[in-house]
Image (tube, rainbow, N blue to C red; front, top):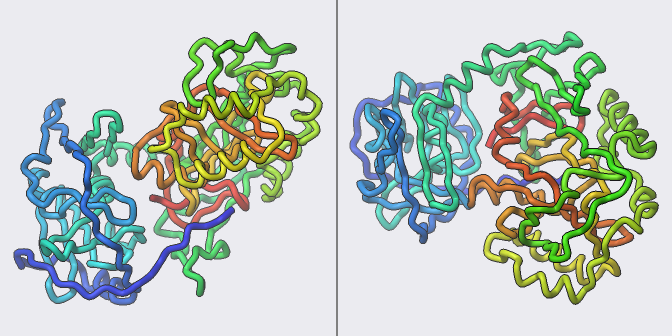
Amino acid sequence: MKLKKVLLGALIASQILTATALAATDEAIEEFKKAPSLKQEVKKFKDEVKIFIMKDGEKQRVDQKMTDGLRVVGGRTCVGVRDLVNAIEEAKVEWDGTNHIVDITYAGKTISYPVGKPLMWADGKAVTIDVPAQIDPAISKTFLPIRNIAETLGFKVDWDNKAKEVVLTAGTLNEEKAEQSNLAWVTASGQKIPKPEELPKTKYGKDKTLDPNSLYKIFPKAADLTHNPDGSLTYFKGTVLEYTTQAPFKKVDNIGPRPSNWSIFTSNKNDTRVGTAIVTKGHPEYDKEMEKMERLCLNGDYSSIFSLNDNIINEYKNQYTEISKEEYKKQHKNLNRKKSSKNGLYEADFLCKSMDKIYDATGSLNISVIGYFNHETGKNLIFSYDPAYYITKDGAIIDWLDAKEYTKKYGDFIIDKVMISKASGVYFIDIPDISIKEKSNSVKYNCKTLSIGNYYSASLAN
């Protein structure tokens, strides 16, 4: 599993803000001084985005009163600090010109951002962030990712990609944290779950990547797994680490009829095969592989979680409908190239051109979610097969390792199909729609250096 590199540079900048009493503590200032600088290019945001704040149950638009506009820094949508603070009633912003620190106070809470340092200070501790406060030299104003500021102040942030709207709802995130506080911090097997402040700080090696050895690891035991009646599996039930897998697809002996106009890149609304499979729970080979996966899980080894026996694919090859290269090329015009990730677009095209066979394997292979992975690469799902690519509801194709960057740019997306590639060919499978946002939000514990097992992880906040 590749880890995203954190690039470290240097920044010398000045800022024009009203100087008032300083809010950052001496401890925060000392931590900021130790951190390396990170300079990122500040670009103008070309599209229009409407920003609303919920008040008394109604959306109130606030972007029209913002004078600095939006920027793009490190792929994130950023807003002028002063603009956003002015839009939030009772929020205040202060500037420490000596140490180049922006302090924001709201609802009794203060967060501090050093300009050009990949840190912020909140709740009495330093927190690593991937896009630090940056100054647009053209107007000498400081910009920060809107999601980072809002969520740190306790707002829930909702992004409507179709309407191009950001909606901030006060207090909701704090309510979610309160819900988490009612969950257990000890697993059924008696393992203590450390609170974020008790975890070791992130370490960086010479190549500036996250050191896996710095992670605090918890290995699930048999008592930590709950087998549900629908076939799904719940890890660490009743704790802050609780996560429930998707129920396996419904087992069938024969797949239903394939729609004559079946499409790769657009939705097939009446395909009765979706959510069914010949090879799923109850199939000897499938059960054997799942039992092995669970056994390895309990031993802390997830090295084979991503793949089932290739013999299964070959055995049921006659159940798949072959898609000719000509048909694939014809359907390719429906691909949403604008929203596709660069890796997904390149690799998927390469595979479909180079492989001998392309198949629609809907209804044959179970492609349900059996785990969750939250690491440097972002929040990703682990399927019962190893899908290389997601095909979204609006026809884009995304390398699953690009999902984090994609959600930064477009917000939530719905997985409509997955594409897997084996030596025997490329397989497209229509699955029940999965919301990345919904799945991500189902994991309550969000920290930076906790890993469950060797790969499965409920770690690393955005």
